[in-house]
Length: 189
Image 1: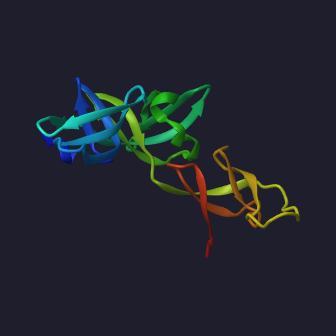
Image 2 (image 1 turned 30 degrees about the vertical axis):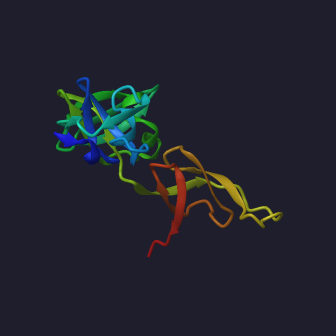
């Protein structure tokens, strides 16, 4: 059980029997009252974000989640296909909602962690930074670069992101999967 002040970001808690990830938490006092933890929670199954206040006397159970390694194979028409790393024949399908927005940065044969709740996969943990090859990049155009010029590039997975003008086709770039943004160009030696 977690005390009200132990409910911190990145923790997974059970609320009404459902798993929630704590996105934000702020403990404060209102005038002469007892402290309150104002949190922002994301439902791990539906993705819905809610706000919840926890008072000093409240306790919350930490969700019993397990992780297992799974290998991404391919996606087609909204269906994402995975298998266990050592058993390619045991394929199974996950919905686009379960995979989430980070799925656009998955390369075939990438092993990721799946969060399991009640014997069901509810979410994926994709590495925070991945290296991908640029498939399409328009040529840099001279112009107003006072604010730092950028252009839209297409990665080997089909994802489109904004990157600086010096990124060219064939370059390898590092991408933050949580924010979906360009981090840096990688020098392959």
